Image 1 (cartoon, one colour):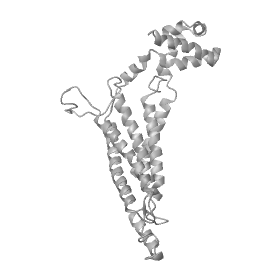
Image 2 (cartoon, helix red, strand yellow):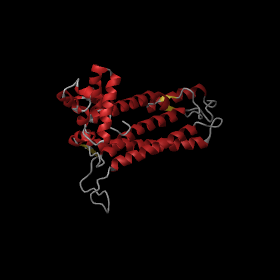
Image 3 (cartoon, helix red, strand yellow):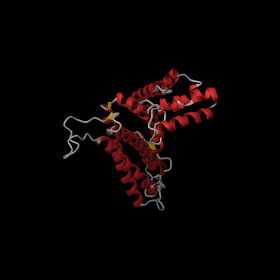
Image 4 (cartoon, helix red, strand yellow):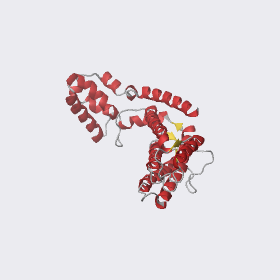
Length: 303
């Protein structure tokens, strides 16, 4: 967290978080369908003056034919439903961008935990032959940023004067058209990224060890806290952690110098508490649970 080691977490946990967000995006989009996808036949100003009740019936028949819903209050000044749609798509794009940015970051040599598909023969640079660039991730991030720019325009388009205004119609039409195209590109981009993404668990494990065991501070503090109280335990482990960083020494060494710790825990117990694989909490549970939820959702969407 905040760019620093916190506690161990699995890649499956990270995926579960993304799935959870996507489930909500889909729920919101489905929940908006009756408001967003509507037909309107209200005449020049929406008053139905030229068509009367027959116009409402015709509007309903149009909706049935198109698989949409009939606009309850037909008016050319209403734009909140279209703005809602663009906002929902922008939220979906924001999550997609976050995912792509994470893959982009973890693809850096400094991390080396993931790699998006890089086709054989792909050239990353005309002057640097070694380059394997995260092209797809960069595309998704850029497209998503563009989608978000249309939210203010959509909100502005709701400021329609009187009963119709070409200015705001032009704005919302442009926003809708471009947003839908971009979201299609974003989702296709994510699909391509994860269809053949490479995962390097050995590098993930090595990266956990970069802090020399400091990532396990919380676990040791909680165990010690049962013996001497949480705050006192925090002070003891804090001192050992700061000594490890400031003196560039392994965390285990500085822990063993804390008398109040070694009086209560053996060296063997301390070594066991420094194992990150035994402190991943409910990561496996979340990964398995949301993997199943994703599979169920995919089947529903395919029907």
